[in-house]
Picture 1 (cartoon, rainbow, N blue to C red):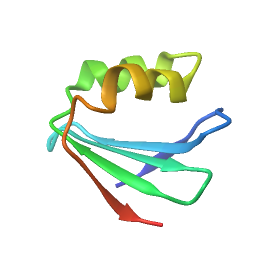
Picture 2: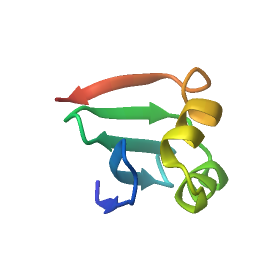
Picture 3: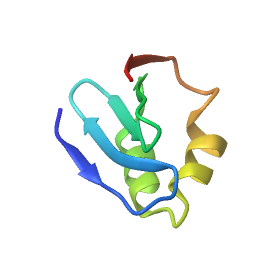
Picture 4: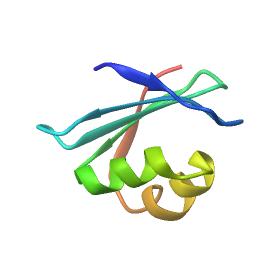
Length: 71
């Protein structure tokens, strides 16, 4: 999955598969997490958010099943 670099103090890059509805988030700390069942509009809103970490905490963490895939 291709990742797009983002400007964030916490998040390094974000990848998304619309077909699979899978969001991947790579953190500066080295961890990469995969969130399942994420709609395209949530990915779009994340990419437009001024605070990627804040958006993740408020709208993604705790709402979607996730697993650590590396790091």
